[in-house]
Length: 274
Length: 132
Image 1 (cartoon, each protein chain N blue to C red):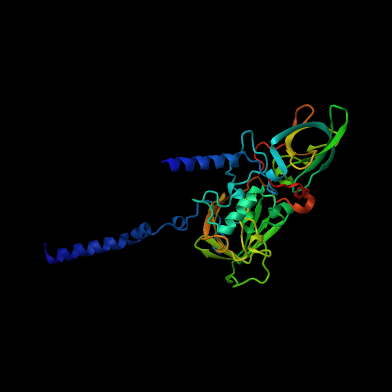
Image 2: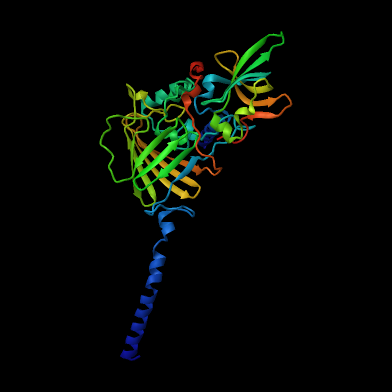
């Protein structure tokens, strides 16, 4: 083989590699859908972010008793927010004792029995519907339960270091991590003691005013919204814990309906423990 | 192995308990009603409150000795019933009905409904099936 022929072959190989480069690049880079892990049918906002707008409700994954459901079909996490967590929730000793006492008393002292708002976590697990409204700097969630709302600011502002006036749902800011909206919240209302904060579930798992909650909202596909919720509350729990909350799009065309607990509340006086 | 069997048993038992417990989103069912005390009542609707957190209606029930007692019956939320196809006029004042439900724990003449039927057996309200 002459030197000239060898040079021609090298040039040809180089040309082939150049031609194949775009193809190789396409193969080595994940497609947009795979990279963002968002399924088909998810519409996007003008800014290119997944659009969470719609009416959602918790996915009904709790089996009905024999003969049918006896009341609102709620998820297991409504009763035990740690349902499905290996080893259960990592309660601090005082919190574990408190939950034991509350369960022994049939959960009669659940603040929601007296129509007190359940707070951010229970708003996820209750069986009522919620509507998400989204624009470029704000995501609002309207809830049937107690006709309440959440405002999640996505305009770049930072979470305040402290909140002057704690509230049931706290103060929330969100930031995008790819196609996942990461929401951080603090400033949860607590009474005189750490035992007097929100109940996270019917068992009475406590939340103190020191808690920070992180939610990762991801629209898995058109009909499914996944929320990975992490509670970091070292006063009540020995370690942060994370649960998955599955929500589904309501497709029957029914809008939100008012649910004002105080309208005709007459049960609280009849609640008894063991 | 024994530990695993025990753990599986405890888990299955817990799941079974969760499956069997009735639930109320507003308050604990077990704190107000006794699931071990089912009741069937026949009477006439006297008043209907189509309200949240639970609908309530009142019925006059005649006992074997001829006396009439007024019962208060609590049901699901308006939201749950509406999504199950029920309407405010599903219950009509003066209509004869049969109610199956559970007795309250701390007072008399109060029950939580499971199903309400008309005199000819039509289901007027029920909790069977998907009620959010």
